[in-house]
Amino acid sequence: MTDCVVARQEYTKNQWCKNLSGLSPQPCSLFLFQEGKCLYVVLLMAVYWCTEALPLAVTALLPICLFPTMGVLTSKKVCPQYFLEPNFLFFSGVVMASAIEEWNVHRRIALKVLNIVGVKPVWLILGMMITSSFLSMWLNNTATTAMMLPIANAILENLFGDLEKLKENCKLKEDEEGLSQIKLQALTSEKQILTEDGQEGAERHDKRTPEEVRAESEYQLKVWKGFLLCIPYASSIGGTATLTGTAPNLILMGQLTSFFPDCDLVNFGSWFVFGFPLMVLFLLLGWLWISFLYGGLNARLCVRKQDWQADAERKAKAVIDEDYKKLGPMNFAEGAITFFFILFAVLLFTRDPKFFPGWSIFFNKGYVSDAVTGVVIISLLFVFPSQKPSLSWWFDFHSTNTQYIPLLSWKKVQGSVSWNIILFALDESGLASWLGTHLQPIARVPPPVAVILITAFVACFTEFASNTATIIILLPIITELAINIKVNPLYFMIPATTGCSFAFMLPVSTPPNSIAFASGHLMVKDMVKTGFMMNILGILTVSLAVNTWGTYMFGLSTYPDWAQSLNVTSTTTDVYNLTTSYLNATA
Image 1 (tube, rainbow, N blue to C red):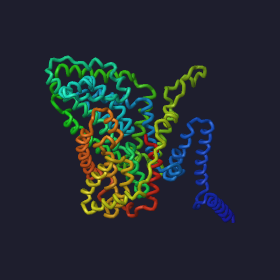
Image 2 (cartoon, rainbow, N blue to C red):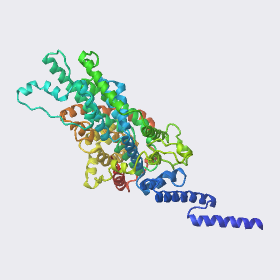
Image 3 (tube, rainbow, N blue to C red):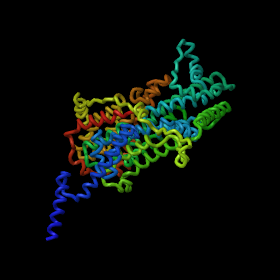
Image 4 (cartoon, rainbow, N blue to C red):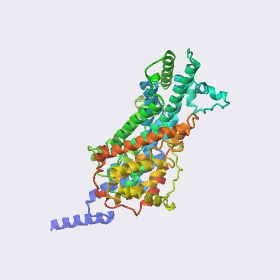
């Protein structure tokens, strides 16, 4: 009789839990445990909102940090309450970049790399490209180019002399014909800061003949063009290495979520393993091409060294050293930002890299994503102090304590992130259907050839349109094409996404190209001549990557189960929502 009473009480208890939760029967202790976690987060947010211990917007992001890590809800259920999940990864990258720029860490990295590679043109071009590509993996491509170009111009003025004087030496015959001199506009005030201690290096006294001076000046102007082009090109290339490096990468991830919800192959770690070797290979080929085309590999500036040239190199090196010394030793804030930046990259890479078990195995499967990881790290930036705290205050309340200023403020984020960019869906115009009709012949060629044709088509299209608009228009079409011919959709989607960043031929193709062209020293034919070969190198490099290590990384040689059914009902809406909300965070 007693056993029956106990059984009845246990049944009543579980039935009460079932009715209260609206879920399947489960132990009441588990239900209350989950509810207790949720209640804890709500109370914590209430306290933070009342005390303003954190910025209100950062407090609002706490459910994204806590619900998945505490096992309450998966990130796929939490993030859509704000906007699509991939948007948070991109947003966290933008916020991290803002913190790096706030404390000038990017400038310290740039000057250190240039100090290591030296000032010989061939190595200086390589140093500029390495620095620009690395920074653009994490920072905005436009910001990277705007920072690097003044540094390059200041160094080159100390290496070759004043640019206006070089032009005068090159235009002796043109001046006789009455042609006016081209006026070069200053890029930024940073150039004046870099060159203020090196103006004396612009004057050289040598015994060369006028013809030798003219020939050398023409050659140096040619090298100068190579420097103006290598920086924006490297910035565009570097953005392809990480998911947060450029907008098309995360649009690919977002559209994969919409089209193929069961596909979990693309994340920060797996994309980095694919994209970083691709970036390094393309960067090396681009360096060789630019150096060859603009004289960086010429023996005059790489092997045989004249006295005046050796003196100019010493002065250019002194400019880099002096500017680096002006930064002073790394302070507490710079060290903290560097630590969080490294932690940000390492945690994203090792969460679930696919080729070895990541740290996400310590949490419930499917709960913690790249978006959660990024938001957790950037949330710490609003709490961690920018000045080293005084421990003596904890033992003596009368002692002075350092002022508490966090590494990053929400005001800085609001000023660094553009929130008013609205990108309209272009499907209603009929352009997507027209393009789809003209892409159908690709289905009749072998898939490896189709990869080359798709990458070439996208690279040409993005020369005249933004890479964001290009990928939004073409990616659904390319996805349908892959489904129709029973090819792994990623086999076409990945090269199309990467090809969107290969816009090198026109000043209007990308903002970095426009910044370089605004210097006044480049002509359109210079960019077309250089960029055409860069596009070919990029297309071939992507094809090689997709058909070698990309096939191994993403299983591109087989038609996957997750591609059996394409979710087309919400394609247009999801693409629009993804682009509008997530690109609102584009710097």
